[in-house]
Length: 110
View 1 (cartoon, rainbow, N blue to C red):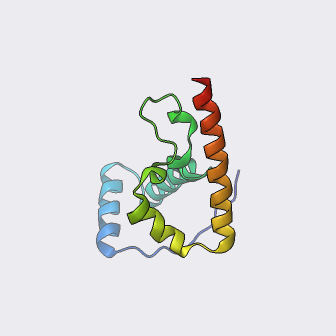
View 2 (cartoon, helix red, strand yellow; view 1 turned 60 degrees about the horizontal axis):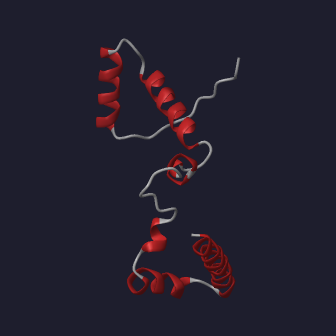
């Protein structure tokens, strides 16, 4: 059995009151509800942000692998580039060259 630890949590009094009311109505305890919610959070986010797990969307027709990639060059990309240092810009350039070569190869196959 895993050891349990106790810690202090600061939440608004109104939220605490609502959680206690719900717990009482469900015949549970506030701690049980909070632990279940934390377990769910760890389950969902433990391996990283689920938004960026690409495998589940690969077969979708309208899927764009990087939505930001298709944003406006002037309004989105230029301000982003302005914040990049030389190393970051070089990494972007290398990836862009890879994408250009790979997409050209694929276009030739079509």
